[in-house]
Length: 273
Image (cartoon, rainbow, N blue to C red):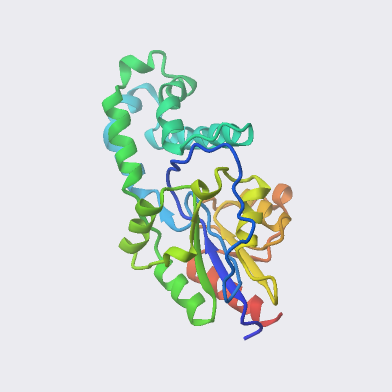
């Protein structure tokens, strides 16, 4: 084993409830005994969207399909627009919970994809149904194996999420994995969202610098790229985005098709250091 100071920080999924507009970094950050930090993306890395997609098809398919709009395509547009607005609000000093943003822009997104009268086609009950499905996401295939491989290789696994702690912990438990409270960090803790450099630097501040080998893993290339610019080693998994678009995001230190394969890649790369 190349180093005893190895941590893996996984960014999971979900809403954030903090409304603080200031970055809170402790003057004496908590130190951990080992330090390889690998973070896996908030949306799509550790948690699958299958339940959300099924809910979209069941609830909105009969309404959208007759007018030539795919329910899953709408869901993608809705989630992506929400992530953008959430990020812009955070960067401008007005941090809002992800689910508050999603609820607010639902009808706007319907209008943008071609629905002429969004509030006549859909209702607040539809929004509630879909957001409840979003809260009921499940762990992605291979997550437990990925965590097990990394821990057996000496890595401390962390969770870093935009979601509330309890709900995201339940996601992980349902997928057969657990992360100790001391290794679980949310954007609520710091009051600012990704990809602000302060998020990644906050995570680094929690790791002992001596002999540090800090990894960040995600299913979004922009997330890994931002983490690398802040000092992490980067790993990307294709489970969500499929296409890496390296021409705009650059190369990553590890790239893999599945979570277990990504764990293998990190372990192999670490052994060479």
